Image (cartoon, rainbow, N blue to C red; front, side, top):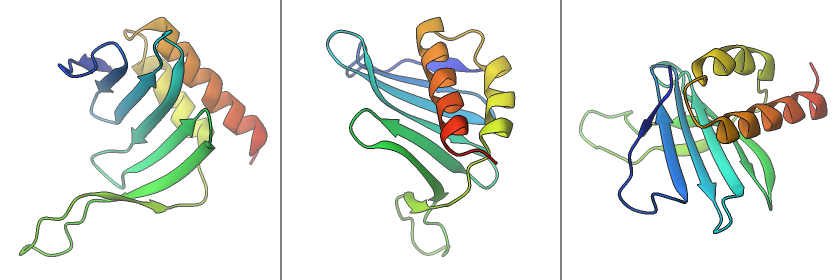
Length: 121
């Protein structure tokens, strides 16, 4: 079940929710409108992220954790990753997000549904 991780910086504008499968980051403007989000999924396996931004739209990436060598610790980066299984992610996100802000939850569900309609299959 997603729970909020409290952030000291930008408490009102950036939110972070986490469970064993998801990390959800949202950013809001001064009026409280969500301007972007990143939903990282399968975070303990082959982590990927679906993102949405009010100016750029959707993006889907694989998270490269930068840990290919035990001698270096590199920062994770996003690498383009084609197909996004919106059905699978929606199926897991809906029950997992029941305890977070309903405004944020409904917005993310709406955007995931929109992505599914734009990219069927």
